[in-house]
Amino acid sequence: MTALRNAGAGRALLLGVAASAAMTGLIWLLGGRLQDVELLPDQGAAWYYWKLPDPTPWTRLSAWLGYAAHQIVFWWLIHYAQTRVRRYTGGLHPVNVAALAVNTAFIALHVLQTHLFYDGLAQDVSIFSSQGSVILLLVAVLLMENRRRGLFFGKPAPLGRAVVGFARRYHGYLFSWAAVYTFWYHPAEATSGHLIGFFYMFLLLLQGSLFLTRAHTNRWWTFTLEATVAVHGTLVAVMTSGPGGAWPMFLFGFLGVFVITQMHGLGLSAAVRWGLAACYVAAAMLVYGLRGELGAAAGEAVRIPAIEYVLVGVLALLLWLGLRAAAIFRRPAPSPAPSQAPAPAMDPSAAPPDAPRAR
Image 1 (cartoon, one colour):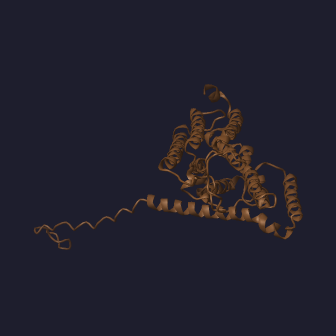
Image 2: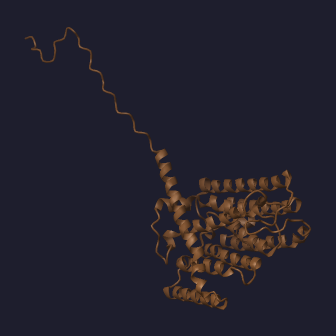
């Protein structure tokens, strides 16, 4: 741990990526032990296949208690860093080392929990909650980066500074929830889709552990985390529905967000950005042309970007309403107007104000 603390944040990041790959490999190596678990037949898109047919209170508690402990400890570390550390560094703070150790320990715990009890949170919550948590994370990044790289071709959207500032200050709690919740949603299965997803979650947990370091704000690293969802979504779509499935919608949908927004924050020249946009259009036309679906190319390619940008507006509106409500509740109540002081009692022996004075 001392050596890790003395390492620069960049080196810690590289070691963290390697450790993420190693932990993914461990799940793969142990996956054969889960092949005898009996599961119900697949029942459609809204059905999560990897859950026990007959869960028990112990299988449920093992997942929920592990998730709750992981979440609470990680949130406490973020709070500690924001209130006690509060400064960026080129190396690692002790709290970063603690966060890396905590996430590693809970990853190992979840792998053990899977092999003892199998079920994740999926037994009790919808599959769309897991997918939605990651989408919310990506949408929050678009909102947070609006001032730096813009939202549409380098142009910022008219989002309030207070809204963006609030998102940037407290995004760690949301991102931590999205990563930890999604991680505990799935059992540590070794299918190709699970392995790709776990590796992505490990990278997000690594990013969350490096708060208040220069690696945490490295634009190429943060872009890599955003772009990885295109690889993950496309490969999972190919694995589940085959080459003839809907994978182009995920590939060109997420790459569309790259062309419209993400590439404008990387310091690329205008010529390079125009070249990337041209490659994107040509690749989309080629793929959809070979599939005989050229007429559907535009509709499918804009679906994911349209959803994300609408959600950016919705999230901004909700944050604005929340900030306005908080401001109203914090506003001190106006002090009551001072009451009219009663006229002093008149001394009967005193002359009235308009009476002539005795000489």
